[in-house]
Image (cartoon, rainbow over all chains, first blue to last red; front, side, top):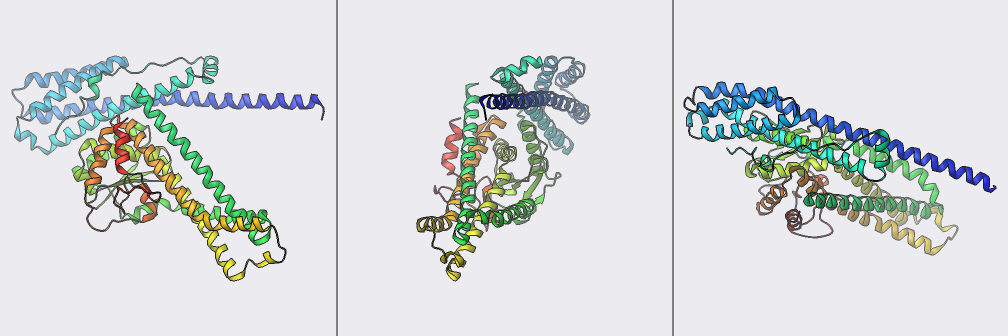
Length: 187
Length: 301
């Protein structure tokens, strides 16, 4: 074999390796981006689900809590804020409001033994707590997904391909420190 | 943020260790097959033609029956959402699945007073998580959440796959060595005597065949312990609350097991804590790392 043949083989080999790396990074970046979209959808599903549970809760509670008008109104207000929220950040603010309103509702419920014995109420309480936790975890997963996407497109060699693909850093959801603590409704 | 990076480092280190140990196991496996060929035919390559397919079929069969085997050995039943404790378990599993970004596993329950839980399944899409009724009764919500995070990590890390495949490799190494050992004993290495080969090589081959089953078993246990640490770290990343799992492990440690543990010893590595042994012993023969060390690592995260 002469030097020319060896040279050609080497060049072809290097081209193939570069192509393979490019393909795997292209796929990885697309996959991570889809994961972000997907986890956003998951948050949305959970928020809707929680909003759907509220009318049921109000129906159950109404008969017992005649003197807690303010507490009940806050919950209803927060719910309609969620329904009308247009941006992710608005959505989260409304959801935090609802979390707070529900928290005080459940706290007040402690004073109504009849209500606390109501099976329907207990089930709703469990399910609302569960959806709250799910919302917290789906936000966490959203941020995890954004983090791994950002890490991939900002470090070498991902950064080279990301530029070519026109991918930009995505923003994490701002979750207030307290929100992580709030969802734990005591029973 | 600094906290999170530390967890990521834990996870990366554990993954690297697993790869190293698995490579060692694969080398051991090939070594035994070569030794087999050398002792029998004075030609290590012949054994590859016979040994490798047999071993691979054995591994495939063990693997494909793994889920049913585990569930029936544990006498686990599907969870009942009408019982509040079991409903809350289903909720926790759903939450952890969301945190991990995985499909929700099926939830099973094992009627037993001991606190324990395990995960099984070949891939995340059809996995199963099972908890004992003892765990549901004795663990607080955040502790149960820690345990479920640990199990979800086993699923996410494909540990069940690693456990069943490595166990099958251990089994086939033992099988090959046994066949060789008996035939050497009774048949005196057949054709081997006709042409005296390299005596040193022969001794090495025989030694390898004798020691490989022990080494493969130890390797398997080392993998199992590494995966436990990994699942602890990863589980803590899912719950963002290492303390929950730490408290659960403390409870498991102080809980006095009643009655005979159900389930087969083969699947002991899948449980959160070995159901067959008291936990505090630190030995190269344990399936799980010592509980105190696990708690210490969780609390330092």
